[in-house]
Length: 101
Image (tube, rainbow, N blue to C red; front, side, top):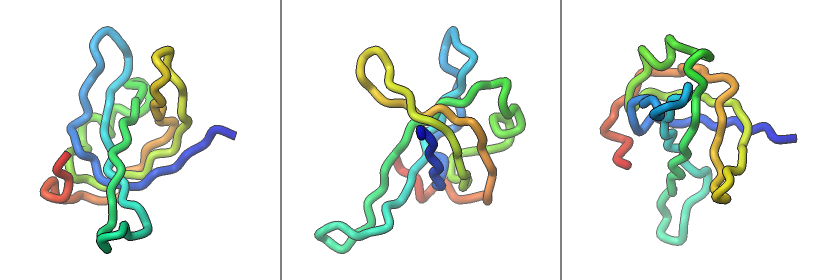
């Protein structure tokens, strides 16, 4: 089963990918465990959103906002993995100061 859910902060404004129907966002997701220095690490996950899926999200969510993304992972021809959003839920307005990617 290819199904993922992530919750984190938007690190970039949604931007349209040229010559496609997709927008791209980057979600910062904190890990639940500390590294050897006692700090929590953060993963920055690129997510593609079909622009027909949720126009309100693209218009009203900004860098720093907290979102939940449900989707699947696809492998591109060059071997890179990408997350394709199937549902996005806005959770809270946030501060872009916590997202320095």
